Length: 217
Image 1 (cartoon, rainbow, N blue to C red):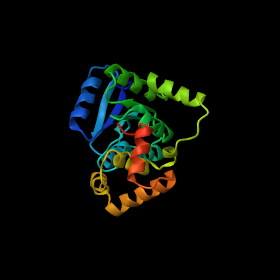
Image 2 (image 1 turned 60 degrees about the vertical axis):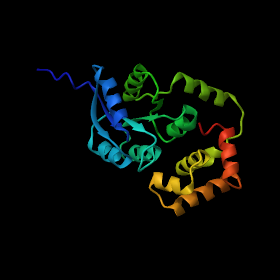
Image 3 (image 1 turned 45 degrees about the vertical axis):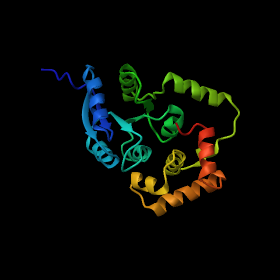
């Protein structure tokens, strides 16, 4: 008998929220050409899963408890370049989409996207194409058409950028250290570096900058 599953798109799901993983699996269960081949609940599990699987696509959450999603993305792209990684996030596209694409993501989707948009994105990236939503495509087109100076926050590393958005959201250095499983000293160093790079004096100026540039919601 012919194997009818050979042409299926095998997908991995990496998200720390069980309810999100179940929702994604339910959406994909309604398709006839996509199967879920494994799931992970944190960044380290996602990397191990990618190493041991022959899947074509990974759905990867940006906000992971142990390892930032973009760091996970870079590791996977380095070790398994054949695996297309589609980033998922609750954040607005203009906060992390371009950063994700520059890091090697095959696409970026907001978690509030319609199910059919997710399915279409998976099919596109499984064929080697990039996926961006119509709204993100318009934003990218506007950037290309504008002769503007690169914003200072674009110079930050991924971890510095994450620290910036968390400080601007009102979190203390100790809160950030706990949430990211880092030492207070390490987070303080990130804060000092990003203030220096952005030529800002303190957290108040940083917060003002983040609000002005719509880096926090």
